[in-house]
Image 1: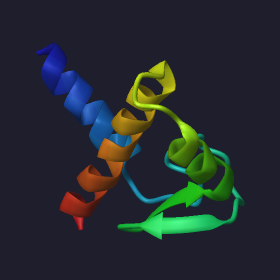
Image 2 (image 1 turned 45 degrees about the horizontal axis):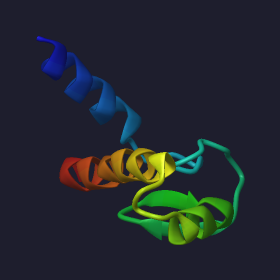
Image 3 (image 1 turned 60 degrees about the horizontal axis):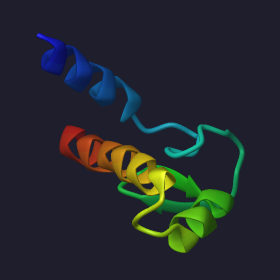
Image 4 (image 1 turned 30 degrees about the horizontal axis):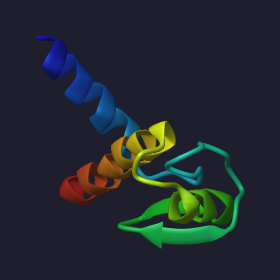
Length: 73
């Protein structure tokens, strides 16, 4: 049941919005992937983050939301 609840929470979070899919800040400039915004600051952080860094795992999890939103289209 927990997996279902986690999936439902991710699905709700994946809805397109004006906020960055990574940090949630609204009104930012950046790029859109499948309708989801990745702000310039988060894009720079993602590119500069090493795979071994704990933040990398968080970015990967947030990026999954982009694909969930694409499935909802």
